[in-house]
Length: 131
Image: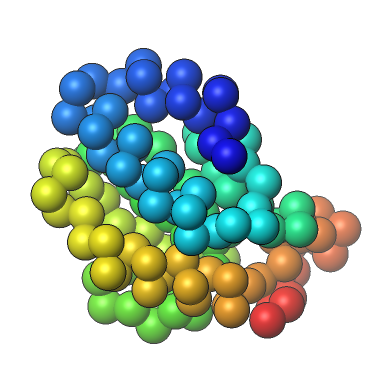
């Protein structure tokens, strides 16, 4: 079930952004059945066993869908920006740009491939692969 705070976040977006956020939250929630979801650092994020998996946010370039362990997915459509962490993301500017097949594939990979962000502070910034 989608956290009401996420639904509020979606409702506060402009019309086209609202459509993208609603579609993303619906698909993510259906695919990550065992996840917890909430607003985290002001954005919708889904967690598995306390570990952040996927989230989205409104940015200048559009709606950014980010996978915390996405760099390890080896997916051409996901952009890897930094060297230090394992995140990768994609930007959408219209609902029609969201490919449900790709999204479901990335979500399946997000369950199978996880880096331990939950304990990154305890490990003084070192990321360890969980799965």
